[in-house]
Amino acid sequence: MLALRLVHLIESRSDLVAAKLLNLFLTEDKCSDLHKVPQEEIRDRTREICKNLSDWLTNKTEKEVEKRYMELGARRQAQGVRLSQVIWALDATREHIHDFLRAEGFMENTVELVGTMDLMGQLDRFFDLAIYYVAVGYEHAHEKQHEHGHKKGTLDIVASF
Image (cartoon, rainbow, N blue to C red; front, top):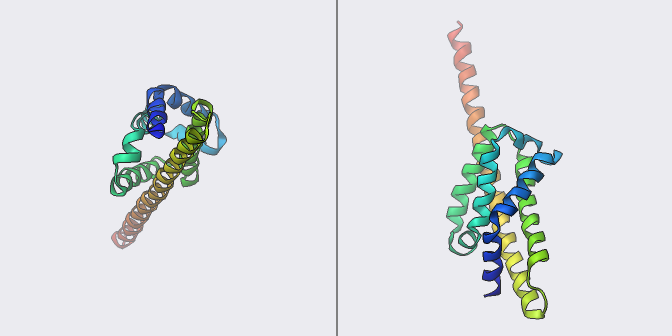
């Protein structure tokens, strides 16, 4: 029950959390490639995670996380964002939510502390899956791009004879 209240607190402040993360993404060198992505897209994506956190943590299956984050990995690869920076941004999102929970959470007694720690564990599992699948999607997109480029190059050589 406490975890659900904390999730709803994050969801109710999703615009604030997303704005802080967007500012971080625009100023941090570790994710400077995100400048290649429209700001609205980053803001909307961050807001989507925060605004629908309870859904991501309780209702979404691993298959749904896989689909969404493989698509995101492929999209970031196509946008020219380095994989290390995509992973850093996802991990920074996780850390920002953790910080929010520590600052805003209810940890006045053992039950509240355990509830907050349980939620942080659920967040970690979600973000671990998200990072894994974003990397898989990124790699698949890179391989497809490489295959396409290799085939095109071969055809260009043959066509020149």
